[in-house]
Length: 225
Image 1 (cartoon, rainbow, N blue to C red):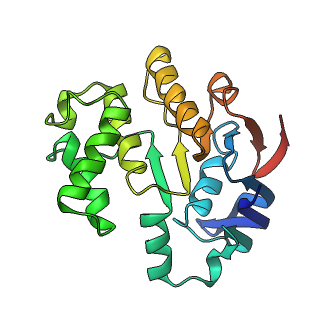
Image 2 (image 1 turned 90 degrees about the vertical axis):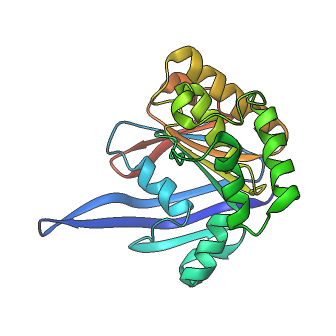
């Protein structure tokens, strides 16, 4: 397999009230194409910071982050924006849906931003929503959906541009256990079809369903299973 993610001695230091806060301390990580990896650890362990660096939403203080062999530090802002739009899908705990757009429009907008519009965009959005079990809810607004349904919309939107990498930050954090399990089942289904997934969670039961579990504490990777 090829490495889709490679980090080398990755550090992230924030300045808060004149003090240096080390969110990441020398992280070395590789993820192969097609893996389903969970990053697990207590609050403040650095797992979400690491996910943001992997997703080109932030830059490291030092060290190297490579995606599909390309160093993110060498990319321009425009190149990083294109990377996030075309090659990385994001799923967040709070769903981040646009409240005035329908379910279908929330997925279509991700496609339009990537240059896929019209009939092709609508067809792809419709197919994805059917895949996540929302074929009958496409005209609804987000407020008319349950939390689990909103997260399914977010997953469909994240996969709209057929990204090489899907990043999920506490995707079950706002859901009850049964609904959260249904979301993890969706991830497992897409992973079985070849989708690479990196998921952050504080829940060890959710993490255990990934193919590989990486444990974090105090900004460091402490081991894996």
